[in-house]
Length: 170
Image (cartoon, rainbow, N blue to C red):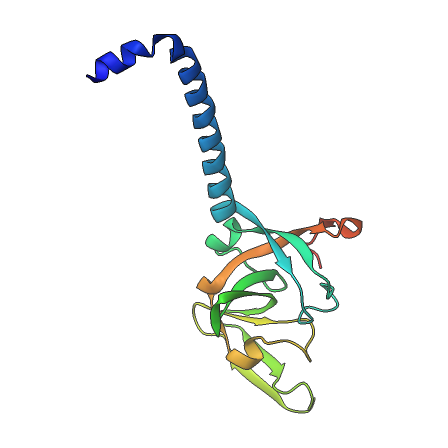
């Protein structure tokens, strides 16, 4: 029965083969994009006051490197994208201030500059803070975060176009 159907498709076989080849090529392209955006590099849109003056209030688009965080290549001063420990469906952009074993001294209440606290970042943890100490929900509020919450490091600004370029030395 099946053989009979394929025999009747005789004149259409070249067109079917061409369509199958193009469909397979498109499928491979989508697989490549999925793997790249999931495990290698992806874009991220930021907005809000927590990283002022490094990142403006208006929406900005950056490229985020996902490979280096998988291999533990995060260092102090890196700007990272992480899952919000208080609401894991949301993402945050913060600067790494301390790594595991570091002693971090911070102002516990930015409105009252004379109250400092010191904490030692536990094993597997990272201390992150926003550049805008007065408008940032960061480790000063929720403590050190697990390294596993870090999604990637921001390394290239792509929008707005007047400020396009590398972002690793900010």
